Image (cartoon, rainbow, N blue to C red; front, side, top):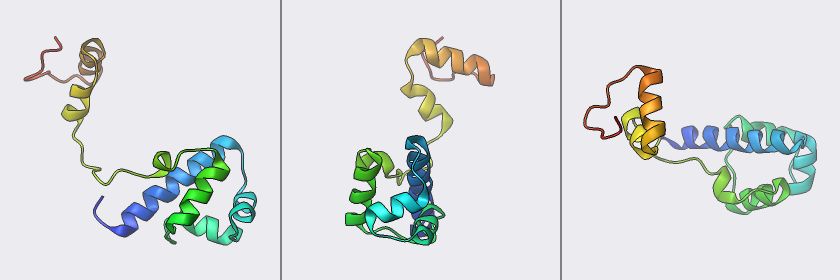
Length: 108
């Protein structure tokens, strides 16, 4: 994540996804947290930042922990790093699927 606009956009995408998963419309969410539908649209598109108390309120309304809505600041995790996080059988399968060689990897 390189900038505040990138963070705001990622946060908005997570809020939108959570809202859609629970079947809440933008105007319903806005009414529940004291914002207009336009403000919710702007938040979800990353054009408007979210104050902490509003983020907590949005999370409560959506029934999600706040941390689930927060994007990671470290967006540049490499595929090999992600593969190392998998258990060995899944790691070997992932290497086969993407056609990579597990160099320095004890999965195979």
